[in-house]
Length: 270
Image (cartoon, rainbow, N blue to C red; front, side, top):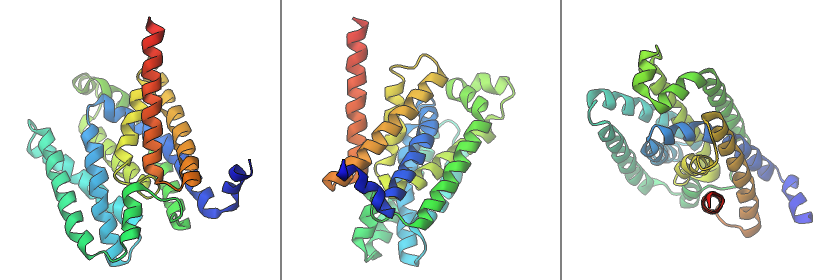
């Protein structure tokens, strides 16, 4: 009990848990749509691309989280531009932006002198979350959640059938671009706490677990948020106790939860 209460004695831990809770709410909102639209690779692409923004920020002396957010937004623009140039090869746009992001990260990281600081963005860190980053995540989370609520109906239609959505009058191109933008902002916001190499998994795993139990879109989204909140906060606590990387700990807990739910559903159906 004393160990648990120790969490609330340190500002950096309070900040980490607050950020984790905010991310645990907004990540499934984006992640479920990513899974239903079969665009999981966009999350992976933007997550790796955000590292280029991180390295650029470290080199120029700007806040890496803010630079990652800006760079991810430009990457989102790039994906949408290339998808229009190659309409029949949409996956090519993702591959090109991913290649650019990895290439830039590889080159720029050669000049980063603080390797430990850069590594904290790869797998997440509890002790390096700053008050500025807390305020930044608060703002980004509020914007993402507000836009998701405002465009809930449009995102719902596009997630299942884009052709029918267009016939129903949904501005598919604009909403798709907005969705890519929200994905970019969410990933960049999560990079500091859970790690850029891990955040794409957080988009997918809670949604996959929720799809085992949810009977409709709203119910599945609710399950995904609940699973995300539980594993995020338990994972952060366990990583604090064991001094392990928070991102990896959270993902392993989510995988364990997914396997447990799959086993439960298999036994229940029998």
